Image 1: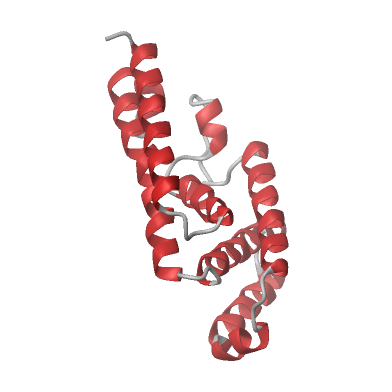
Image 2: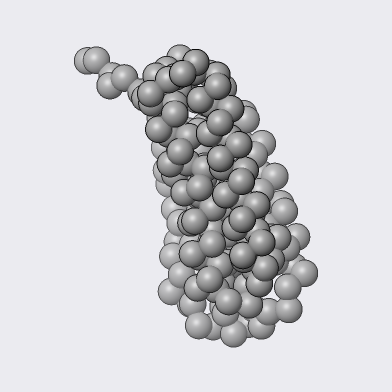
Length: 178
């Protein structure tokens, strides 16, 4: 089978599964796609490596495409959370240790060797927390978690198989030689 045909059929298969999933999961909101995209990025390689597989990112930091994508997702997430009717005081009170941890992480930026990188990582970690809050503020949080992971699996697993078999430069990453 030609590689481009395999990739095309994979995308058609995934789109079909997404259509079935959307019809069956009518009780989860559209905003669940935010955590789904976040999980896809966490479960895969950075967007910069997708668009330039020969690039060598040693630090684990993404590039400008990743930064723009994450800032956009965090902004949309904050808008979604501001629209939800949630008792934030109760959430803060019930999760005081998490807030203390985030405060400590923010304060620790002062004595780090690279404060700018630490601040970026802190904001990304804050984004993780915000994405979790989108899931937990759904009407059925357990079903939202299952749906978000299922949507990740629908794309990432078939795409991984096709990329590993037909597009090795995208589907695998060679180990670094010392």
